[in-house]
Image 1 (tube, rainbow, N blue to C red):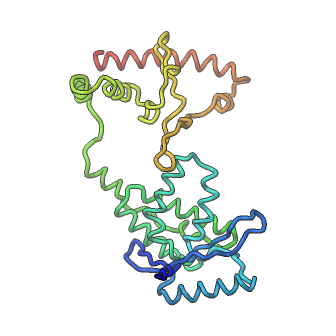
Image 2: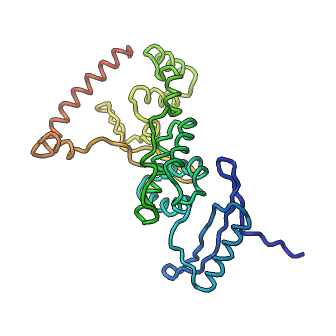
Image 3: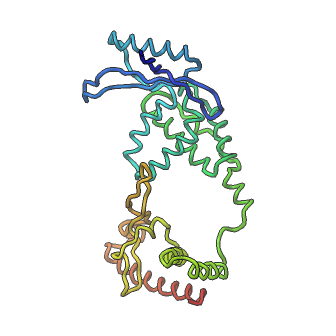
Amino acid sequence: MKQKKVSPIQSYTNKRGDTFYMFQVYLGIDELTGKQKRTTKRGFKTRKEAELALSRIKIQVSEGTYRQVRAETFQELYDLWIVQYEKTVEESTFVKTFGYFKNHILPSMGSYKIDKINIDICQKHFDEWATKLSKARTIKSYAALVLDFGIKRGYIQINPFTHVETRVKTRKVIEIEEKAENFYTREQLIEFLNGCEQSLHYKSFTLLRLLAFTGMRKSEALALTWKDLNLKDNELTISKAIGRGKSAKLYLKSTKTGSSLKEVQDRLGHSDVKTTMDIYTHVTKKAKEGAIQKFATYLEI
């Protein structure tokens, strides 16, 4: 029995429920790398329109006249940008950014022709994100990065996202106004920790107590090793954190830090780093001891 040939034309639905068509087509072998070249085209309103575009490209490829000179849609521009962006950030940051595009930006804007995207379109989508999401401004800034990339490549002249009005109530502001203060009082913290000590495994209780008493991030606490513990001075060194990379794989990454000693030296006008270090060590040791004593007295521990 003869197998039915699978059509390269695929339909997809954007976030607004509109149906579009797309296809992937083989372009031959890259002379520079020796690898196969393919391109994806999307945003066609009808299957017939997609079929005509596919046929046109195939003819141009066979005749040697096809030139893939530029990205035409936001999706195509994003595909170029994301490759470069991945080289500049932590893996966990890349995964988070990829999620913003996959779940919010591309469903809304992926099929748009980049030279047709204007301020009204960008404002419309930002307003939609703002009513539903707490990170609407973050999502808008990432969408703007793609168009900035398009300007650098010479595909477009301006970035309409730079003119979007963002002084609207985002979901986060609404949630803050609706919710009560999100922290424990002294009495609540003591009650919580007492309950944890009685009902949880000692490892879980230790983690929660450590987080409550140090203010460190969960990812930093989970990355601690015995080498980070100084039993002589009762100190912990926080120098790394657990990150979540591609395929939800966990890995160690450097933790977020403040200014370096060199930066502090420059700001304070010290002649060398040793002067800064001597003063810093003396002052911070006294400050830490005082803060620890006040905290212990406050909680009666």
